[in-house]
Image 1: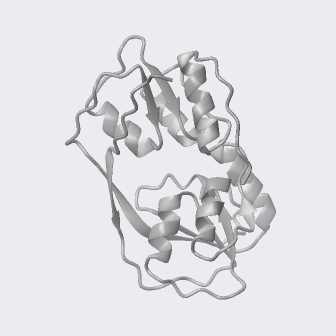
Image 2: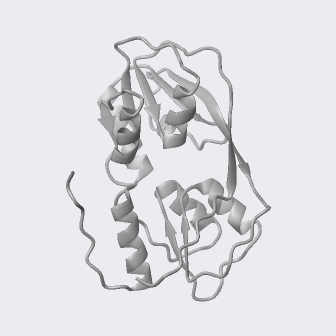
Length: 210
């Protein structure tokens, strides 16, 4: 479409070692990073353990580790996904591989009868050694990226903003950003639609079936 795209991660991700995997009926992953850094350490799992993921994108990534998701969140409202998951698992135990600074949105929606285990498998460190050129539109993929950006820059007049996921959306609201594009799905098609809507580009986005 004639736009220049700049890709810059504003966080440094590092693995956090763990030596014990608590016994559980469910394991829920809120991100692809959680999946990667959990299985990178070759955890011992029982054959009957079930897996939940935030989105279809994470479900596809989970398949790369030979695991199929038994629960897949729909939409981008993390609180709604959390409530759906809580209803789905009833009173079962859940393990949450996560970042040290996780907001733990899913856990907050579970019943007091659920036993939750938080397992830290990676750490996000905000970067400051980056330079972002002036852009017409900013796309934020996580609350951590939002914090890193606004510790260094302010939103310029006329700049458009897109947030991936409701937690990122809410973090932007905390910085006083009022107009924010929000994809209806976590995949690339949903993101592209949100971007073109903010840029007011009239285009037809289609998906090729595999």
